[in-house]
Image 1 (cartoon, rainbow, N blue to C red):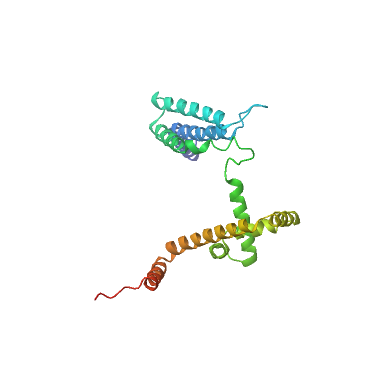
Image 2: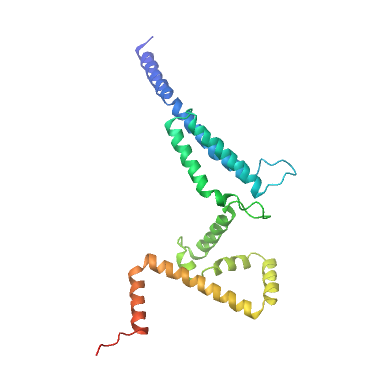
Length: 221
């Protein structure tokens, strides 16, 4: 065996030895995502057979049974310290979110996640970026509020415009005023939060000026 071959052989043995030392940890890393995927499988309802009803009760029963099984796994001593730590954290998160994870199955066509809403928001941002050329749309939201989503829905096609016109024609005046007040209040709260977080000094100064105007200090005798 030549010197070059011997060097390459020694280097290969070193690499294989390092790989063997990481084998256990790599196996743990591969096993831990399986817990998350299995929890998602329980929540997405894909386990249901044809004709089987997926309800809050059935999903909750399966999820709770799986959580108990995983909790027992923690006490068996078959997991490493890293696996016990990660599994404990996962079970703690699921326990905290348990009241909210199984509330969407009894209502028909209710989304299990907010992925569709996030895609809609992204489409709105993309549309604004194409129109204005700006990446940040905070000013747009602060100026128009929830009307941004209404305008986008209105402009999708003629069917949406016709649907809005039909519903608006049947809307009572009192209800129209109530919706207007709700929209104005929501917009005002959004502006207040933005000013307090990003322009706090100016916002507090304006509050002091308004207070001094509406409640002037009386001079003591």
